Figure 1 (cartoon, one colour):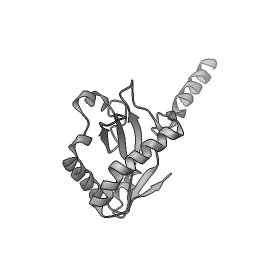
Figure 2 (tube, helix red, strand yellow):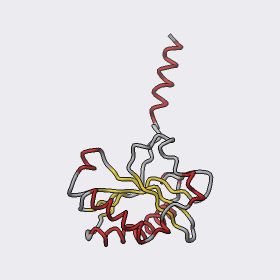
Figure 3 (cartoon, one colour):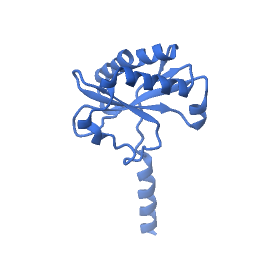
Length: 154
């Protein structure tokens, strides 16, 4: 009986944190996912320096970590501080199929250290610096390509 209770406790406690990524504030674009995907493709064509460099290719291990189901892109910033943002589309299959709005959010940040850093592991000032950089360097251009204004939401 004790062994069964112990196994049940272990089972439920292993499910509590579930390894969820959480996320920074999401940006909701009043457009389709297809239009936003096209905008991201244009962004990478015009600004290839934002693509992940070869030296950090081993950090694109999201499928191995159990997040291969997420539709995501990685944006690299080569200027101080050098870092990458793992950005994914937000929502379930119904939300992702919505032709009138789509959301994306930074899910993790890599700065050359030992691994990806989640929002909860950053100080507020650092989170805001990252959000501001994302808005200025990425979101602003995606708004231009989609010709819509994104809304920042918690």
